[in-house]
Length: 484
Image 1: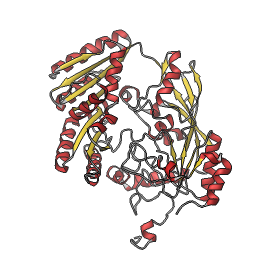
Image 2: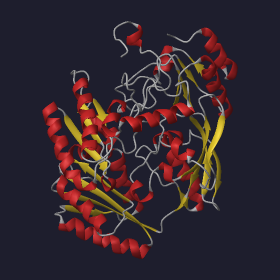
Image 3: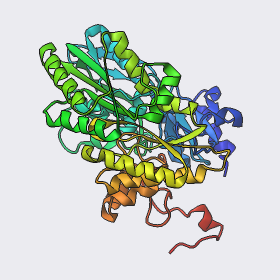
Image 4: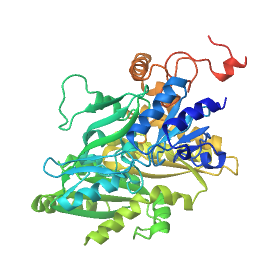
């Protein structure tokens, strides 16, 4: 049911009426995130200009029982920002100021609409940078990074968003404002900051974030290596780690991903090669140089067919441009695709990729692979054509790949989140008691279930039903199904 005029009027009292969008054409721009296979047009889109307006808008939602979904840049890949048809989208895109950079204590305070890369740009004059670097770092925003606990190419050595966020200012589901964590990262009692990070917008809306900054490394060495097989490249990754080396990054791409990326940005990758590795080391000059020689030797031991070493910052940037362009570039070789991000043990990479290839052949669909090889975080891209009627097959294959990762001793998601896409697969990874505990935590923050409903957690009754106290499913209300 569409929101009534009284509710809209309430939003227009706390926001500029021009910042309350109801035109169907304008609202359509917010109907999905980066997972474009799922679309819902919201009734209203709210564009608050500061944290106080975010809180005021949420209070209206609380008073009227209106479900809301927070949205940043909309680059998420799991349907986490998918709107609710009878609800509102609260965009934080206008909250985009770097509020403070504190080089002495190596931290910065930023609003949620600041892009990931803008934090490093603000810190760079002080010789500092922000370590987490999702491939979409030029456009993805810190609020979304906090929601998804985003990682990136360098998370093998430096960790995920949770390792670099000291505190968050959060608007809870009733419109109250709290700070989770402290400026030092140390606190007494339960780690509510840790609970909130990665909760995918289901516990509240971030309005400010205090992040940890790191000193820029003294030396950085990067290479691009080609291999005759995925298995050979996988063995290199295992041997590098076994040698006691912790690279800043180890990324792998297969034939299809290389083809797409090279066609898009011409980064100097070898088209047609079965597998390519990007390996980067950083740290003190002498240590970095010594380890780099060992990495080169390991690559050669495993049949490396081409070894390209970046001889300048420009060459290094070119190599990373190829890797980070891969997701978007796949659009050049397929009209549609689903992206997964399951995690498997490093030692089972070749086995899992072989299984995925077989599953793709059986489904009659191509699968491109680009992933964080160092920590086993796969990013299989299931290529399909909606116009050719392949959507259902692609969606089934995508879900099966996520569940295969769990079967292999891994997890459903490494960084993209569960969102709408993988909520029904959660029981494959967690037992009933685990899921019940998650429901209790969620209900403690949001008793009425209005904060990003229908995401992350399935229910014992109907997969995808809203969390919190029981609300009849539309099919139940229509008489099409019964509650057991």
